[in-house]
Length: 231
Image 1 (spheres, rainbow, N blue to C red):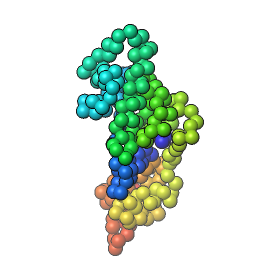
Image 2 (cartoon, one colour):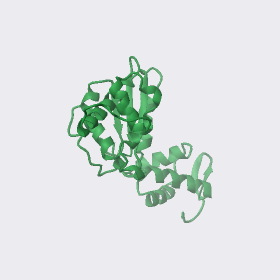
Image 3 (cartoon, one colour):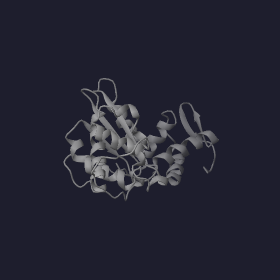
Image 4 (spheres, rainbow, N blue to C red):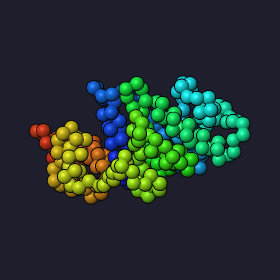
């Protein structure tokens, strides 16, 4: 799921995950790998943050050792393994760990947020395990800004979605939702469109700011422009 900042990637991802966990749905367990701009060179940083000690016992001993080492609570000292073999073990262990998080009869849901800031090791873990996860009970949702480089390729199990800026009708509907369901007058919507440039986050914030400042007032169930010039 890609789009510029403020277009609603995180909100849409949250809505999808809440729907998956909604009443009547199969049980699921959410895993979040939150990438950060100041950890783009820290290997497996978002992964390590998600590895709770209580989630490891079901794994084989070598897998537990590999993942515990990522958290800083242990070391990977498998005898006779080269550096490349140790890395392969770690990547494979991560794949098995994610798969093992699926509850009985349900699915594991892996959310990778802000992948444009992903470190190379975490990205490699994704690329390495996507095929295995597509055959298991694992749903992966990745959010990123345009320009996110990856080797996911074109898989039958992969769907790419791009978010764009709102048109006038979309902005009008979003502003109305942010203001209790009452639609903006045309002049106020013009001002919102000029300032927000179709970015959903800005549409909401500017509409709310107009209401809070008195630039628009609610009269008889409808918003009306209070000032001659909206600023």
